[in-house]
Image 1 (cartoon, rainbow, N blue to C red):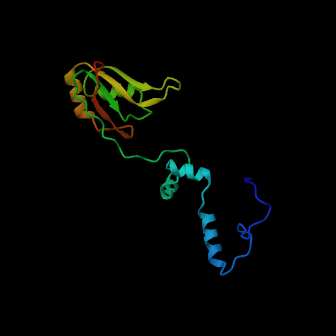
Image 2: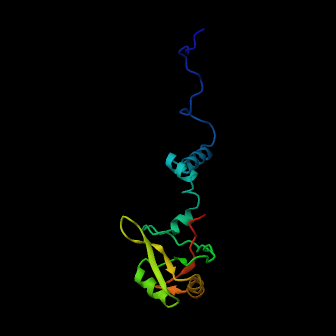
Image 3: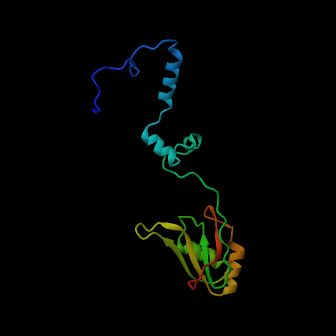
Length: 163
């Protein structure tokens, strides 16, 4: 049997012919479907969460700055060595600034601001080596949550390398 059509057209047309009755409801449904249909990229963006909440995306700044996020509670490390971690440090702080700040509490052996290798910009934290463990504990008590160069410091014991 041949699967080709016999050359005769069927009586029904595929949407191009006339329809009987009221044409307005059909046009309204068709117009609404066209406005609701999203492009492929809109659907992809919505799937990955970019189109989920339009109010939030409109409120975010467009100039490349990150929106402020809630402050994270720093992990409190017990002071078991004279080495201290100093976090939330101003990017303008230098090792001599830290040396002077911690010298008010006790004798400082070393102060090291951690910075990026390629541009030497501070990463925002540092390590300070005190003379004794008692001085390190006193420094944590006195300087933790103290404002320094416009930011509240996080001072705690540094994690040891033996983890």
